[in-house]
Length: 209
Image 1 (tube, one colour):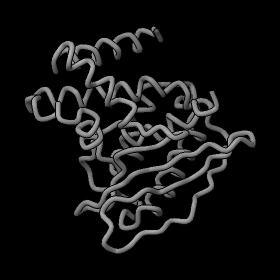
Image 2 (cartoon, helix red, strand yellow):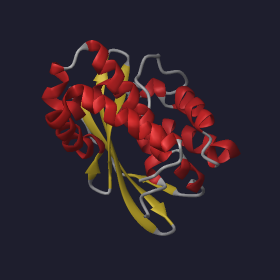
Image 3 (cartoon, helix red, strand yellow):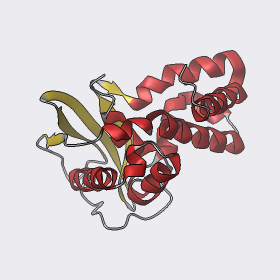
Image 4 (tube, helix red, strand yellow):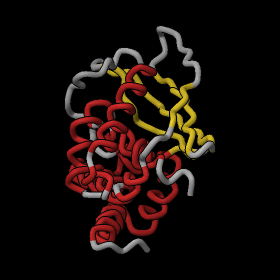
């Protein structure tokens, strides 16, 4: 379970759609964005006991203030749905985005309590001025054990935005594509919405199965 503590910090990048302009972090360079935003999240978690205890309202507040401006969760959800995204109405798309982001928050908020003194080492970052899609690579040392952690970002008129992460070789979007596709194939887009909604209700009630 060594990757468990990583997920809430970095999957949290995808907990809200990006609708606000980033404040206090340089978004013109993808590696600087990732380093600065990640450190702000870590510092906030270490300083807030309610977050460490998995308080959903405290986690939501953290995400709104420290993560929302630097992510594009709408893009993340669209890519996770693949071609099925085009078959959904705007109302269905909005519901899926909302339920998916809440699923990530509820799934990983409890693990935030495990954030303590992990050390993050960033790999040398190389890109050209013409690049519009890049990966920032890092390794997190957890009690001496290295864990691979990468971020995929794309360039927007407002600066770089994170839209996917890779933990131990598993990209978040890829991990959900099959599950989303199976739900839609079997039950349609409304079936996926229902599945996500029910899962969120189970997590809110404390049911992990």
